[in-house]
Amino acid sequence: MRVLHLLHGLRGNPKRIHYDRIEKLMDLCPVYIYGPNEKELNGESISPIEFKSDLQINDIIKELDIDILLLPEIFFCNKYFPVSGIEKVKKIPKVILENDIYMLKDLDCFKKAGIELIINLHPYDPETLPINSVWLPPAVSDEFLVDSIENRIDRVVYIGGGRFSQNKYYETRQNAIRILENKLILDFHGEVGYSRYPEILKRYEIALSCSWPPLYFPPIKTFEIMASGSILLTTKFVFSDLLFGTDKLYYEYKDDCSDLYEIVEYLLHNKEEAREVANRAMKIIKESHLHIHRVKELFDILYAVVDGSIKVPKKWGI
Image (cartoon, rainbow, N blue to C red; front, side, top):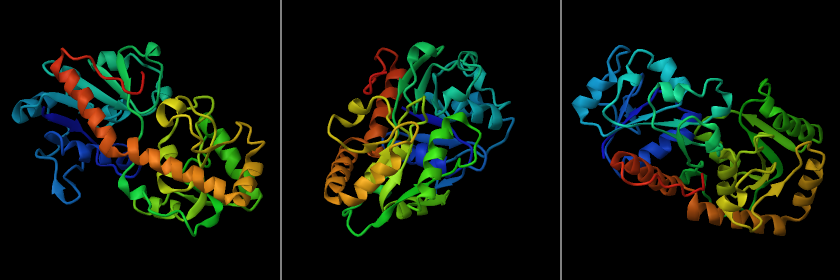
């Protein structure tokens, strides 16, 4: 199976979410990258054809003998490949990696582009989507893993952007940040870059996340915090039992944040219990939620689409 993956030269969050996974996929099958500013990944050439905005995808598929076209989010397809003829690709299947479908107003765009399958980062109800879909949850790279959770800073950390965003799904997170800052117990680091993020995260006893109420999706921070040995502090999220089992692996605060500071105080005064929870969380991440696990699931999905006679596997239920 030979894969052509359209990408757009961006790093940061896309690297955490997609690039690391694609790098692992290259160990399982030939993957060719095409897009603006795409030349190398970790010092190795990954893009055999130089990007030209008017170069047709069908011509690239023919030259490289491609079996399946893997697309980035529809937003990036429209922005970086508007005249590349994605919709004209008919002879091989097209699959798209989508993050934030909830932001899209026109869901028929997938059908119009002739896309066969949506691979969702978040657990969307397949009944609300115009074409077939499968949920492939976030995973983390080995950089987040630790051997020890001792000697940590006795504070809460938040790392990431969106502090002043008008996105309504960020409201709970923004409120949580304000409350803990007012209590002088939170260190807000903002966006610190790909390499520094795990380094900073692993210094702290507790890390703040949020599931974007009322969406209640488990974001990639859920997995990264659990992998790092920090104690995950989050609002409730769907499919928790399916992802992580029934053991306690994190601490949950209310959507209105009314119990948030009380939970933080409890954790800082009950470290033995909190660290047991953090250790259990690290164990299950190592067992099931690294990129090495998720890329095998991605390979099986793509292989089923190419084969055509195999039902697309849905390990995570939807």
